[in-house]
Image 1 (cartoon, rainbow, N blue to C red):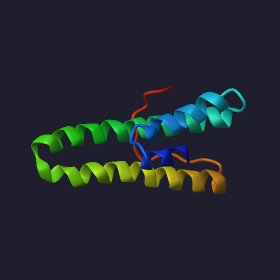
Image 2 (cartoon, rainbow, N blue to C red):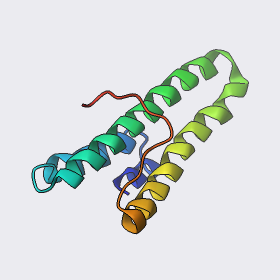
Image 3 (cartoon, rainbow, N blue to C red):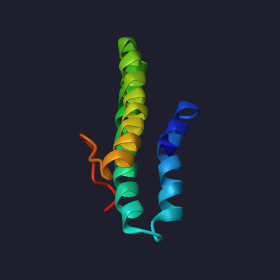
Image 4 (cartoon, rainbow, N blue to C red):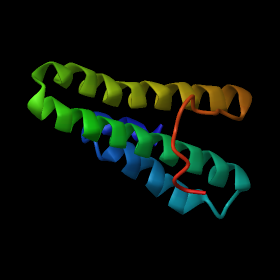
Length: 100
């Protein structure tokens, strides 16, 4: 849910989950595992958005899909929060495994 800060600043998509993960990862293995999943997903979203925004600088119609990528990151952050509260686990549909 910390990724919702991405509504204010796109880089906060990653900084919110990173901050929570760094503060809570030693308290419980659950926070460590879910935090890594969230950070990996948000880094993936940020990377895709960056590439699409760079392409949009050349190909103007790509600006809308770039914002859709950021919106997808926020939507999946909300879905993940609800699913983790309800079921205790959530696997993001796609993400690079950058933090192991």
